Amino acid sequence: MSTRCTLDIAGISIALSSEADLPIEAEGSARKFVCTDTVPVSAPEVRIHASWGDPREPAAPDLAFDSGKGLWRFYRTRSGPCFAFTSPALGPLPYQLASFSDDFTRGEVQIRREIFGARLPLYPLHYPLDEVLMVHLLAQGRGVEVHGSGVILPDGRGILFAGQSGAGKTTLSRMWLAEEGVKILSDERIIVRKENGCLWMYGTPWHGDGYIANQGRARLSRIFFLRHGTRNELAPVPRSQAVARLFSCGFAPFHDAAGLDFSLQFLDDVSQLCPPDELRFLPDRSALDFVRAN
Image (cartoon, rainbow, N blue to C red; front, top):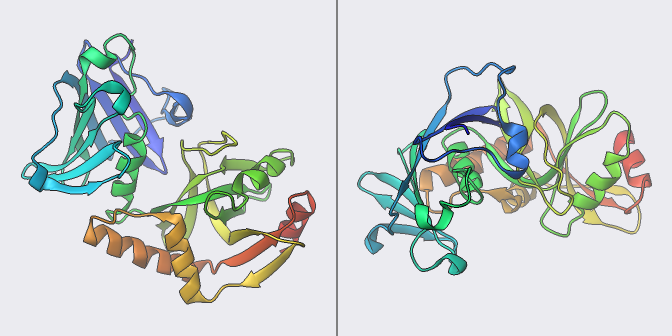
């Protein structure tokens, strides 16, 4: 069993290591994002080490954010940012504590052995830590994660269908699956980054009800806000509304003023480089033909 593993999510390499008595491996859709021996990995951007321990909540005055569901809390301690993870099913003490450098590129994960010792190998970044970490990494000037389905057409164009739950992301994704030469990056979570003045969208391990999550990227050519309609049609979205709607679909660290400012500015840039439209669509194949024509 391995004590090392490297992931590539949205072009960000994350090297995981662990103590010899804690074998690790990716789980679920994260397996698709593991760098294999055939894929060379340069110096990883992020390094995280996992070990057994006795994770404890930091002092209450350090609490900066509570997820509100009793699942995770974010602390700002003297030694750096820290996430504590609890579950009503696993007892009152944290089952995992993740401490990071201020820029989130170096981290230590403590895992409670009495809970997970019989469940080896483990994924040190099991959800929600992997996504929480990525949101904070992106907010350091790298990009933004959004609620969206990402589709790559056969000609390489990338289309982002953005919307909250129920907007139709999974419905459209399942229809696109039947189209020859089309690749779906995700039916629920897409990461958008800017490189050399161009926007790129990336697949993520975090899927929706369609369980579609794939590695890959494409240059972003269109953004559609989804809405069920009585016919297939496009409606223009004023720029001020576009930024607000992108933000409502985005994931930003609200407890981090600098990260929040970056996310807002980044989404403003996105709305300029790739002005979104609202897509009102019928839940049948005619919607796909309409998108291709537009």
